[in-house]
Image 1 (cartoon, rainbow, N blue to C red):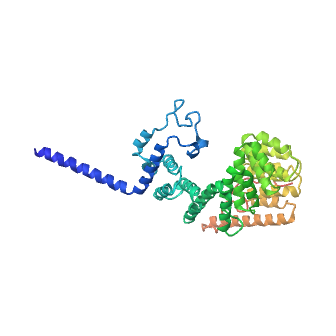
Image 2 (tube, one colour):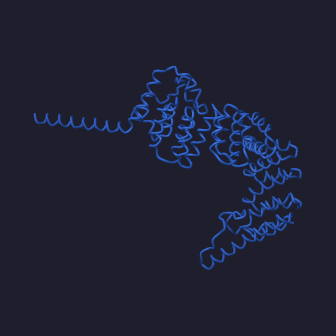
Image 3 (cartoon, rainbow, N blue to C red):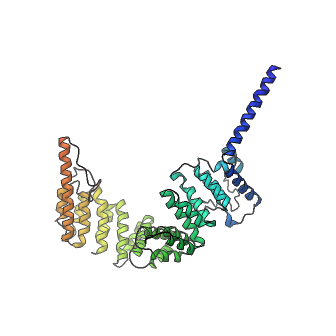
Length: 442
């Protein structure tokens, strides 16, 4: 009898402790759980949710595996809801704190699919519990983007209170979302809340507008002053046009104002074509008339080719007619080739007659070899035709040579080396010493 009584007390104690543990665990996330349960009930009661309210990751979809209704096809077996809940301990409130970023992102997406005051508050509470740093930047973007759909100014106020990186990422996501439905309101807010010309809020606005009004986004970008923000905005629009096809990107670039923006766009397109088909990129450059656009594209294609095979790139550039395009392209070849084979690079440069259009390639060569052989670098620097450029380059070489000499003396005497004005290449050298002497200019 005593044994039966002891067993009964032991079981009762265990059940009580388990019940208390459950109560404590649930109380810490009660507010999140309540909203999450309401979201789950809403989704269950609305099985025929319209397509516009679904969270879609179109670039990562597997259309041959899963139908629009999420049905299993062709043998693909996704995680079932039962398997996932069993593995993670159940509901959305468990998955939203998962250490698995994919599962956690899916949980945030479910919670924020139809943003409301309650779901945003629950997402914020869950976000605060995540480890700080880059690992939660994706969730930050999702919260800011969804919040802006219902209260963009409130979302912006919250992002302004975050740390430097969080503020930058969050405000960009808010502006992206806001400008898709109300670009005028987003632009007005950006102008009222930033003093200066290079307005960083315009980057997010351009990004959002490009989804619904590419022409309007481009026009806004062209009004931005020259600077980092306009460069970022132009890159976003280029990538947006490129996803729609090479012809669309070409047409977009063609309609940009002549100057730095158009040169940049064509240059980036040239790089993309070169990555896919180098021969076609080379033919494109060869077929152009001499112009600033040809110079930009030729320079970018030469740089791309020289990374893979500098000798072949040098042969192509050497066949170009004398002009700015050849000069700029030579500079890119020299930059890549001199790091691998400075002697061959010097031999190649010696094939061309001296002149101002050769000054930039020679200056680049000097900066690449100066730390290995300051004397030869000085000889090449003195071959520069433009007097102002020559004087500046010779002074740079002498400073580097002097610093190298002091370092050598310190090493021989066992003293600490003198403090350097800059690490790495100085005016362009490769670092390191003891390389072979290079050919001198004719």
